[in-house]
Image 1: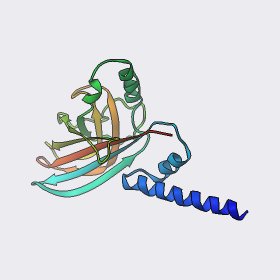
Image 2: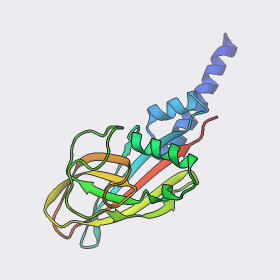
Image 3: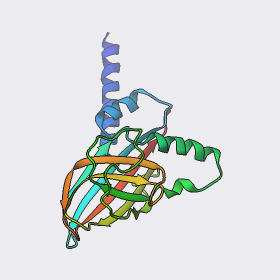
Length: 190
């Protein structure tokens, strides 16, 4: 019995270390717990950093962490790309913001309510580690609005939607800017 209790304590300590590792990169505790139990599965976690910029000064900053909002269309696209010989996978860099408030869903195909601002091609880089894709774009607002959603797509107009994130309103006026930093962390299992 004493041996079993010690094993449980050791496993608990190991899980806490794993949770802290996930927390440091913005992954919710629930998902970290599942990651320490499971294995063998490819998992994806998304986050969206948002900075409101007024006259060149960051006046508001937040990070939205979401799970399970990578769209069905993106997953199908990845499978298709694994079967093809093309470089379209690198096209997921177009940021667009909107006014929609409906919760994200895997079946989403685009922005819910467009602001009329042309999507911006983000700068694509690797994140803090080799398994993180990062795209950063700054959008200049052209009206007084409450921005509540962001999407990342493969084309400026239509295209395949990778991710849609809904967040509490960021109130802007013409000339304000919002910098969006989208990250997707892909983790191998095993």
